[in-house]
Image (cartoon, rainbow, N blue to C red; front, side, top):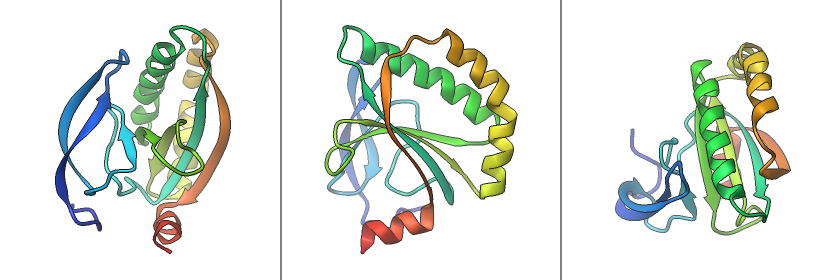
Length: 153
């Protein structure tokens, strides 16, 4: 499915699971304002109608970026197992510039609730073993249609 934006092939810098940058050609808006993370959903179009995102600030200590990426990949496996589509990206401008947004997308609020009920025990067990590598700046719950209307107005 094509994005509502005019599509062009551009080179995005992708961050691998070990924090290594590599260049990958992807379909994206001609002026991308985000840096996508390798192995996660990419593109400007929301992958579901209900979006739940957490904005993270990585702690400045050595190797925290690597630890954060590793924990995001562990969380992704759990979240996808229960039907969420997961995106991890870094905005290049605006309120969240420089932060990482870990975004879960589901088709409806009811499917998001069912997924959260499904993963809560497994996710809590993983979180107990993961070192703290970032702090939460904010959390956002929004319909994808509202997000698009907000961005385009």
